[in-house]
Length: 198
Image 1 (cartoon, helix red, strand yellow):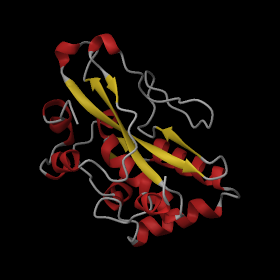
Image 2 (image 1 turned 30 degrees about the vertical axis):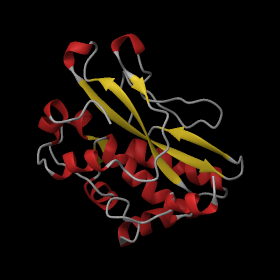
Image 3 (image 1 turned 60 degrees about the vertical axis):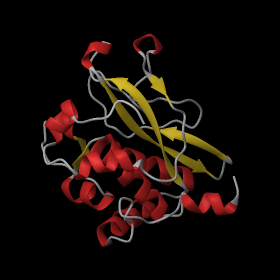
Image 4 (image 1 turned 90 degrees about the vertical axis):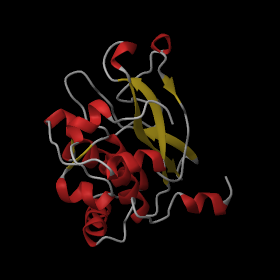
């Protein structure tokens, strides 16, 4: 990946707004408790995974979009949480992008489909990209920080027409951000407005 392309994974934007004072403060706090780049990525991951709640898990109707929204409210769906994760890492100079999966809303295809967002992170000490899923764990969903193998919240089931895009985008998908911006109830949105394809 060229230097010019890599710089896209460090950009500030409307959704990854790490110029926000509170985002910068939290990023600095996470950096100060980390002695290496890998520790920084790990501490940032666990902060977003564990301290920022997933809207559906806690049945919270608030819709958050930008990184600063998510940090302020302490809640968001995966699309929004991935914005915060990217912003906190980018503030500290760690390139971070976005990856996606197409998943069923329930256990079978008749329940419909949605797009799940997670993050890609460039680990310079290892000269490689890894994927991390900070969605948030439940008794049935479990993701972990790992440099060796992906321990993601969801594993796709191809026979259910689920799909892992294995993408690495520098910016959030605009269509997904529009869904967040156009809705005021995260629980309604989660059930009825989430797109099933990128």
